[in-house]
Amino acid sequence: MHRLLQIVLFISLIILINDTTYAQVKKLSVDDQLIQDSIYKSNKKKVLNFSMKEFDALFFEYFNRKNDPNVVLTRKEFYNYTVQIATFSDRLSSLYPDQKEVAAQNKEQWLLESYEDYLHYKASQKK
Picture 1 (cartoon, one colour):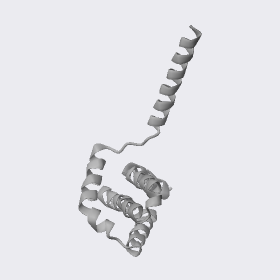
Picture 2 (cartoon, helix red, strand yellow):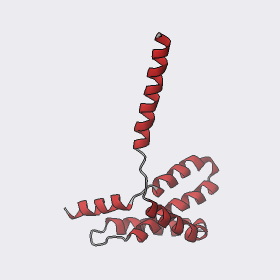
Picture 3 (cartoon, one colour):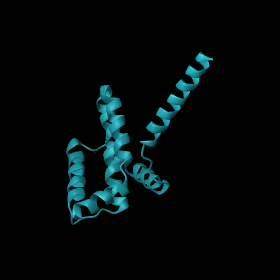
Picture 4 (cartoon, one colour):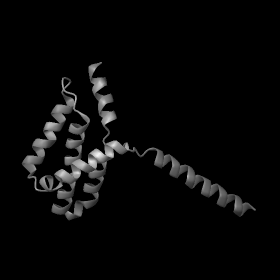
């Protein structure tokens, strides 16, 4: 009986931890995922051939526009930047095979960027 109670408690703990961890993962809407997929497919070859200079220009352009209080990116513009930055992680993982895991995490993080979060950020800039 004591052993059965331990097993039930252990399984409950695993389910509770799993639900908590899952709840922290942000999901994009289906529309946003479709936009991302479209941008990824149309830009993949171009971005994989970027030089570091081209990537730096894209990266700084994104942050300058994102932080400019007079500019609000459209949904497509926002995802165009984030998807291209994420795609460049594929190039970095091929150039630096020992950094594949870091590149994959970077890519995932950029693909999870949400346009709604960006709009909240822009609204907080105006205050």
